[in-house]
Image 1: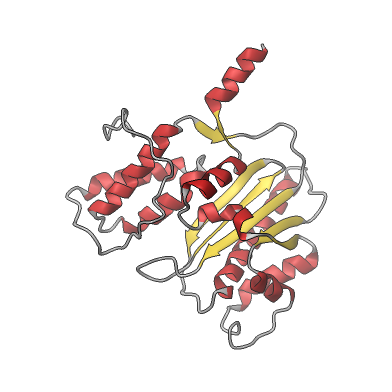
Image 2 (image 1 turned 90 degrees about the horizontal axis):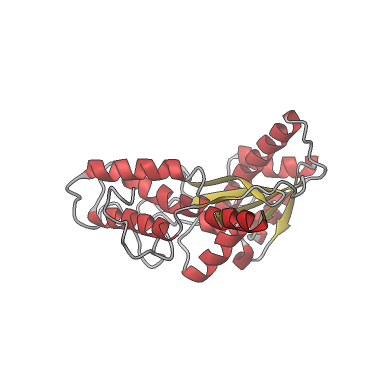
Length: 266
């Protein structure tokens, strides 16, 4: 991809998306070659299967495939410049890291400049290995700040149930409940005691699966500080400091560094 766009000698970017730039559907000049933009985003989407650090940026830019602008293409080129600085980075799966599952879930309320819809995300670790992650714009507009966090909890709970079933079929039963971390106290209180008042009665009943699975013992809902919420990297653009911290905690590793270490040992 770098070769196709003449970026083999470019200066790398420190983050995949600029946190100070607000991308919109109608702002900016029309892009002369929209096919090239769609081709690039399609290739980047495949790359998100092993690179969760670009997942949010690619998901954001994929919303403009129907009528891309020049600033959208510039943002896509920034992702390539970011990859230039870490071309051989991938996920590391340690051979001995425990058999517990831990999840992080978060959302960004009304983050979409065009539709005001929320972006939710989650990531799950099996021991120290990142095994599941997702960044997605939801289909409806949230009416309160609690609702998007509660929706994100419900989505993560469904993923936790799927992981539980998967590990059971693989004869790797989980020894304890799946710890699910959320940085919104209101959403945790709603999951523990769903009192239907003016701010929450409009939330669809199916989202209350969070409470049901927690009562069954599948998940254990726990609070976490916002600055420690790993799912932030999947829901919003971040400055270099927080992004670098979460980048390391996601388990992304320079493959060349690992191979060099093994050669030194042998």
